[in-house]
Amino acid sequence: MSTSVSAVTVPDSGKNHGRIVREVVQIVVATRPFDPITFLGKKWSLVAGEHDARCDTLTKVAFSQVIYETCLKEEELSITGEEKLTRFKANKNIRLGATVFAGLWADYQAYKENSVLERQYLYNREQKQDITYLDFFGDILLDPCRRRGVLCLCRRDIGVWYWDWQYRWLGYGWYAGHHSASLASEDSGLEVKSSELETLELPRLCQRWQDRGFLC
Image (cartoon, rainbow, N blue to C red; front, side):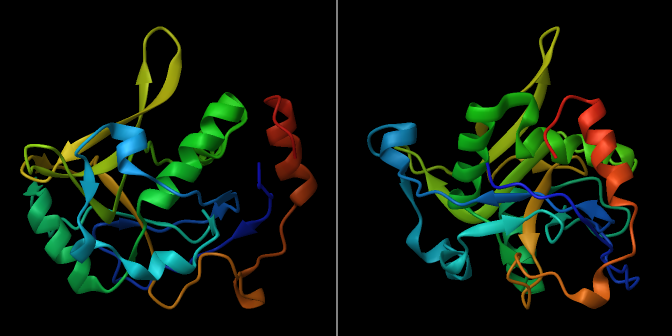
């Protein structure tokens, strides 16, 4: 698992409506290749014209740089997935796609409660953000019936909490709880500018993770 612990403050310029931008633990996940036929079955594909090619250069993504977007405007309760995709393209941010999804899912399968997904969830909770759903608009799925959708990860409860994957159709309603992963267009997702780093009590931060049984 490619995970490091530090902390970064992402300034809120006041222009981040519909996004959650916070100080977060820097947790890094490696991307992995994604084959829709192997993962989903025959006649599944990715829509070539909807792929965000800027993801192709990403080998790792630092979640300190990830923006959780809803693309909702003020007072909107929901929009369709197709409208969300249109707004996503207009805001110019890098839409993280299937390779990031595949990296997160493989990491979770290997590490479970010590995975990137679970560490990031717990840290978001400390920041008063209960993010239990994350989707990936950088690639659009096409099923055998020609329906369009995206891959997503959800945190569920069956007596114990766990993460699962699914896909969600673009014709559905998308609400405030449907967060999409992106990077600022000028941001590789890996480099952290020294001007953004705070003087932090990293031993205290690491101790919090170790108290929960995590590696640091």
